[in-house]
Length: 231
Ligand SMILES: [Mn+2]
Image (cartoon, rainbow, N blue to C red; front, side):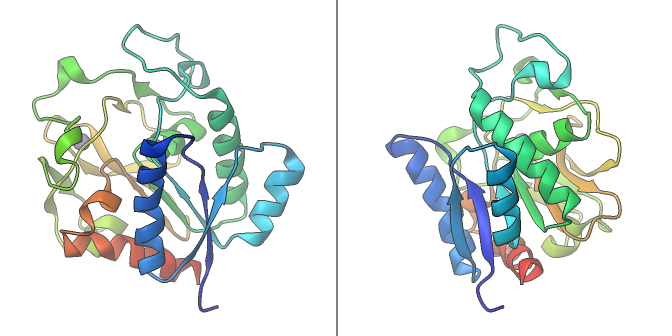
């Protein structure tokens, strides 16, 4: 299979979300994939067709996940959620895991993975952070260091146990879901990458390689490895 079909949930309407969508699409296409954008239809029939046709899935960044999905009430600092997207992405993610499809979970995608495994999130990390984690205007550049487990998938791909990454999140993974482990941490101890025990291929990162890839060559390796896993 020369061009694997990679499903990416739609980010939403509007120019800005389409620009963000384009960043993921471009990185995947440059790595040799055919990208299929997925509307939020969470009927079992729709999910089944998507699982059948796509070789792998990238779960992108986006709005805060409904706290009810991890057993909490919304705090005032929690952003406005998108229940339709939550429902679709959770159903798709669960189906994709059952089918053992390669996964690339970015930012909200990584948080969604943790929620799918019964983990929880910090609804707002502003008061606990020492580094800038919501550095929106410098999203193409590294803003804080992370420590990587050299045996983890991102550790091996980035060929380092310490790199610096960009950051655009105000929430973070708190309690780790059963079956997941922390592959990278920020200096404050926020998980910056997760890994799934015994799963064929799952990259889950809190930073945004799709914005770094143009300037930072090593970040392109994540997309290449993911697309290769989908072949
Ligand atoms: Mn960060």
